[in-house]
Length: 436
Length: 139
Image (cartoon, rainbow over all chains, first blue to last red; front, side):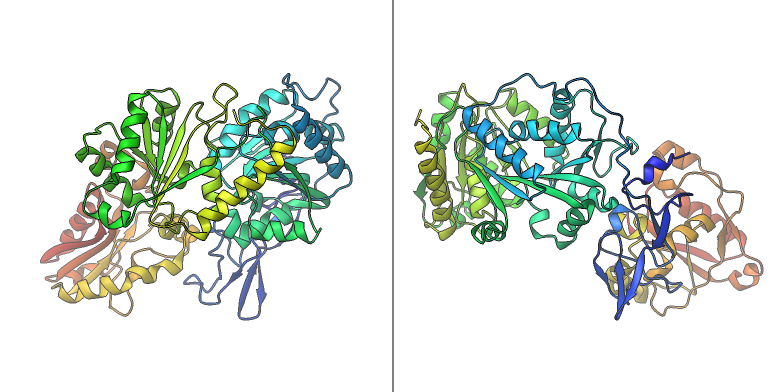
């Protein structure tokens, strides 16, 4: 038996006694519009009995023209909390405090806000004071991200920092059932099941795939938010759309150009290697690259070797083998042992990982160097390169490190990444950023 | 397959229609019998994932799933459990005269242990068919 709380601020196909039901698919022009994901469905997408169904949000459970969506308007029925809400005991650096005050100020003004903070600035903690304030108001808050890894890493931290607040984590394929909670940590896909539920939505890694390129998920974030609500967008690398909104003063922005430990970002060192692709096809790596790998191994310096595509993993592994470097471990998005390998890397049980862009963000290794092989390949966007470079020097113990990018030629994308890092470091220097 | 069969994306049937049509042209058979889905699945999914692949090939739905046969789907079981599954099918009324002496081709989507197809084949043979062969899309 589900309690009526299961419908608060949600839109689900299960009928409710108290909730209003409306058709899940509404006829529009030649086809239908799905009321859950707001995407169009073609009139050819029919079942044998003639019912239309939505192909766009199929993975959330199929909706047909026979289904209805039920909702109960969000009543914010949470127990009042008397104890201090924020149980986090850490402290913020002066830059973090300043950003944190800005976040709170825009939140109180119900305004959307972009927190543009460099990789390793401590974005999560910057949002804590404002989150504590929102929860004290009895607001319902969602902390969402397009990346499930980000949510999984975040949930225990938020649990510790807000120990008395009811929290739920939602992602595809989870086993725990839904519970009505004041703080919801979820993937952006899960927001499709909500309607006008949240007073505040924090979108972590707002420029990450698939949110960046999915109108469905972008509309999911909008409609999960109450009309009176607002959003906080977190990223180190806002895309051109967000930057345009900022330039037009349609979106408030706060910069945190300096990492919490006060050391500037490592700049990307570009090494030109002609025809690396052809050489790789012949089973060879550039001599410069193998020398660098040998040096890292001799110095016991852990590192990540990024390659453009999944198919390149094997080729690079084979080429390393041929050069006498036999311990290469590869990892990609669909690798069933991905978590295990990342953990092994973190615990220094393996000296390095050969990886695709899957490890570009949301992962922290204490003391790591980065090599990008084939940085001129089109899979590496400016944002991806800045994020990859941002893996280096994240801990206060090891605040520096090397980022090397091997490519056939300097491209505009690589220059854009160097430019972005340079720009942030210029601002960081004004705030007293150090080189080491 | 996951999206097509379990999430019910009927539009994906077109992906395999062409290849199946080609293969069926090369098969020698008299009657095509697709593996049926049970009533609950039919109501839920809204289509039979096997017959949806057929474009205009004639077929005969000679088998049905017994009404009382209600357990978890084969795809949710372990290998040992799958192999222990009891006969889920029965012949439809008046199937026997049509099947007598005919070469029957069974059509299914996924072959894992072969348990489903062997049960189906046993029923078809009981119906008097001369020979039974099977075609599955994936193994």
